Amino acid sequence: MPDYPSTNPGGLNYFKMLWSIVTITIHEPVLVQACLVGFFTSSTFTSFWTTLTFLLSEPPYNYNNLVIGLFALIGIGSMCFGPPYSRFIIDKFVPLFSVILGEVICIAGIAIGTYTGTFTIAGPVIQAFAIDLGLQTSQIANRSAIYAIAPKARNRVNTAYMVSVFCGQLMGTAVGNDLFAKGGWISSGSASVGFIAAALLVCFSRGPWETGWVGWRGGWSIRRRDLGPPKSDVESSARQQSGSLDGDDESAREKMADEMAGEPTRGAEVNGGVMEGEKNMEGTERAVETDREKGPDS
Image 1 (cartoon, one colour):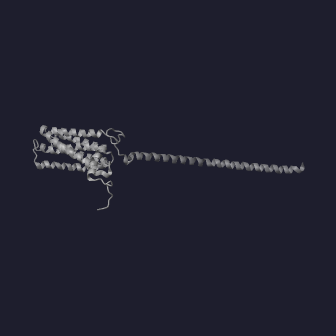
Image 2 (cartoon, rainbow, N blue to C red; image 1 turned 90 degrees about the vertical axis):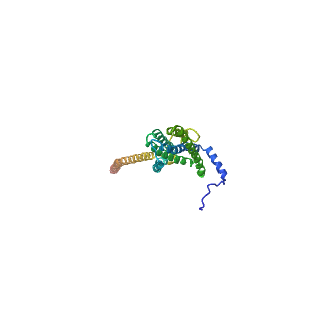
Image 3 (cartoon, rainbow, N blue to C red; image 1 turned 120 degrees about the horizontal axis):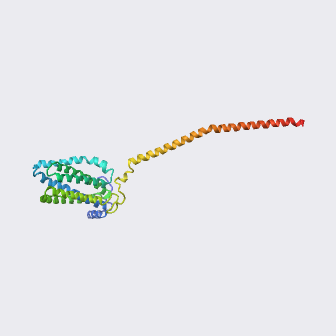
């Protein structure tokens, strides 16, 4: 095996690692928020796919098992949206924004499927696509947020998150089946709408830059701060600097032109002074010669 640096330099044993999962969860608000969101969101996934079989096997559809199983292929469409969504949304904005967007997709699809699924097959198809897409995007964003908590303990952080997700799936299956047996498709679907509403409430209870458990201290900005200023701001600053440099160059050129225009005047003044000095010297010499000529006669 390659000689990689140890990710457990402290020598924690297995039981201490298990206990550290609990302590990390207790002390990290970001992890608790992600776990609660994952719990409520995953419950809608299992509730839908469990009760969908009952809905499609009854009137007005009466589909056989093969046709019902083909509904699972709808998830392929949502998988195709994963890479572009990560590139344009998750990579550019804070994880909480991506989670909220995923929850909105989920609740919209669940509402459409719940209240139209009893009379048109388009409702369950839209719901299946929206749940897969929303759940996938919210989970990717949640993981990107929690992995920054403890880079050397990502497996333990992920364990805490996935335990909450699995608990949510168990709860969704139990609640969904019970409500469908008592009140039908609309009853179980309405519970899923409530679960997503609870997930959104958890999202809005704590902002992306909040360091505590509840609140929106630190600002409302949804853009990631580790990416530097937006491209538009950089271009605007560059244009301002370019304009400033152009203005400085123009001022320098005008100053040089003024200096060049003033050189002939200064030259004429110098030449005039020299000529006047020469005339004065000539007048002095003539006066001296005149005095000499008058001297002997006097």
